[in-house]
Image (cartoon, rainbow, N blue to C red; front, top):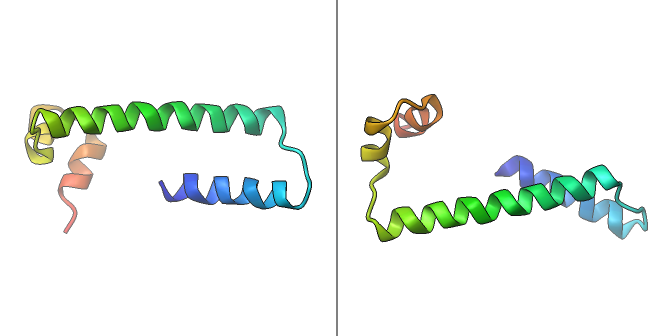
Length: 72
């Protein structure tokens, strides 16, 4: 999420300087927006279904989820 924040901040600064965003940058922003909607929907679903992150990481074999679960 920090990378997304840094990226969008850099694009906003570029825009404030009067520079136009490239087609690639606009596509990336659109994709990030769509991913954020998907993530929001998944998190809302997890909350509604009262899914616990620990339970989720035990039931699937996803290294990222397990890394997050093992954080201090």
